[in-house]
Length: 345
Image (tube, rainbow, N blue to C red; front, side, top):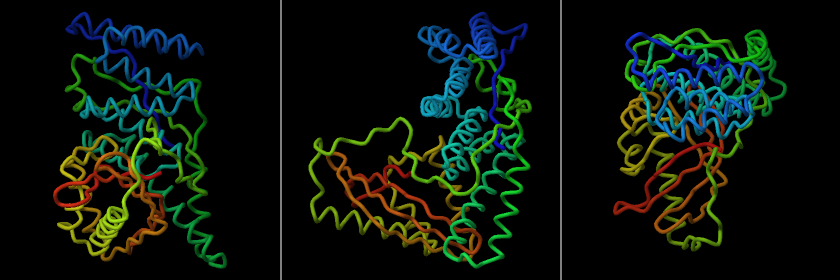
């Protein structure tokens, strides 16, 4: 269902020598992948990247090799780093979305695809994948509703239609991912105007049931013995801050909602703070009504003036409903506890 892009070598008459060398390395690595030698391709790319760490094309190809080797968390890190260093390139966002979807993390997949479209609105692959993500989210919501109301035949019909759409959209995986055009690493800005080539779809997991308990890739939880426990006063303050954030969201009070975030808050999925705020304004202001309820709240210390609040978040509006395990990494500020990082498990 979801399409994973692949970069091929690009040679042009006026490309400087280092970029040509980079293209040759990526092309040679791609040939090794096609020959079923991903370990050799990875060694080749890592040797090259030791001397050329900012070669975007080689880094991208390394991410594809890691996907082929089923090292999903490592591949996610590669593509996430590319979105940070080259935010104008849409393909890394798309590939992040494919990998997040494979983990059942459809919200993060959606955010990554919207970031891709923010950089390249004409990216057809991202538009198609975004439609599949929304279908997956709808299927997940229908499935949860059916678990609560097993006699609802309308829900069964809707879920059957979503599953039919899902199975019809999946195509066989080719021997190697499809080729998409890329700009040499020495010219990253040019990629923002170059239309990506077509890509062959890669199947995603079935819509239902949806796995929402996957841990964040490449993140390790702090050891319990390394930090002091949360004091009772801080615990109450953290819970109050989380509930106030949810209440502001429910009331569609944008000022109070954004005030819950720290100045240093960095959105997930490679979005800039400005793009994230624009996205959140649209999503919060759009529905006629919103209800956000938190349950099973847990608090733990993660360091000096830092703590983590995790909970089950039930979201519903007039157009959509969802239930996810949410985590807020909080930081103490002069204005109270604020959100430094927000993500789903």
